[in-house]
Length: 80
Image 1 (cartoon, helix red, strand yellow):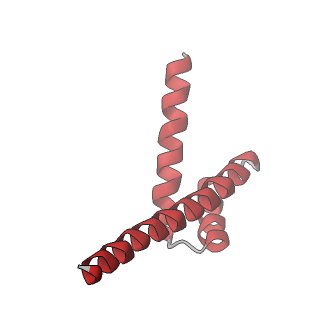
Image 2: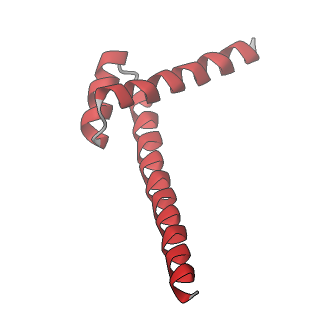
C-alpha cells in the first residue's frame, strides 16, 4: 500500500512540476511577445528574435506569433 501511495505522490509531483515549467515558459514567451510587438518589428524579425531569445523552434515560435495575431485581429474586429 505504501508503494502505491509513493508512486501516486511521485506522479502528482511530476504533473505539478510540468505545469510549473509550462507556466514559466509561457510567461517568458508572453513577455517576449509584448516587447517584440512594442518594438513594432515585422513578422520575420519577431519570429527570428522570439525563437532565438526564448529558445523555441521556428515552428513553435510561429505558432505563438499566429496565436497573438489572431487575438489582435479579433480584438480589432470587436472594437469596430
